[in-house]
Figure 1 (cartoon, rainbow, N blue to C red):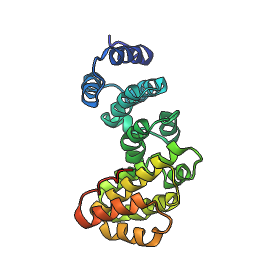
Figure 2 (tube, rainbow, N blue to C red; figure 1 turned 90 degrees about the vertical axis):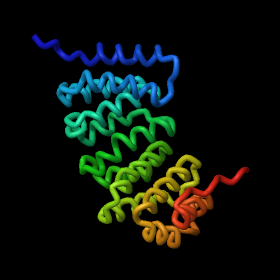
Figure 3 (cartoon, rainbow, N blue to C red; figure 1 turned 30 degrees about the vertical axis):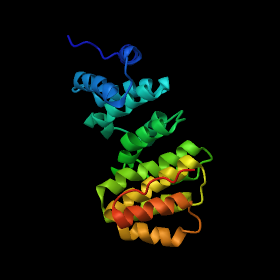
Figure 4 (cartoon, one colour; figure 1 turned 180 degrees about the horizontal axis):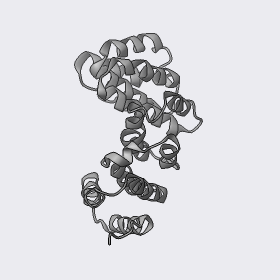
Length: 223
């Protein structure tokens, strides 16, 4: 008889393995995640999502990284994501690392695949919470990397909403978002700079213009 899936027990096991790691770098954590992805290959998507929610609720970066990658690498789990589940997976975001992992693996791809609406992301872009404002911008990366013109207006809209923001972590995210856009749509990125130059932090205009002109990011100025 097939053993019943026990998400709490498996989450506890994974958290224990994470705590025992002597090196917590990305590749080490990813190797552990791959072991569990293999074990969960034939598990129902709903069970994988339940497991990921438990891991994400633990709060630290490594447990969230594993949670988000488990869903990203499990086709059925990703396919059943809904807006409430996506929001629950993002509950408690409180660092740039957690935000970027969430936006690159969960919210961005979900938006790209039509599982999250532009209105939801626009709400994040106008949030009083700096982490959700950053999440909105980093979520555009998945759209930009697809390189399709019909995504450009939505990307530009999020960037426009956050153009005046001076929170350092939001400024850096906006620079990243525009540089990614510039890779496949440099004319649109250039037009954005021209239209919003007065509102943008100088770091953004410098880095994005350098990306458009040379294909590389400008080095940060030393303070």
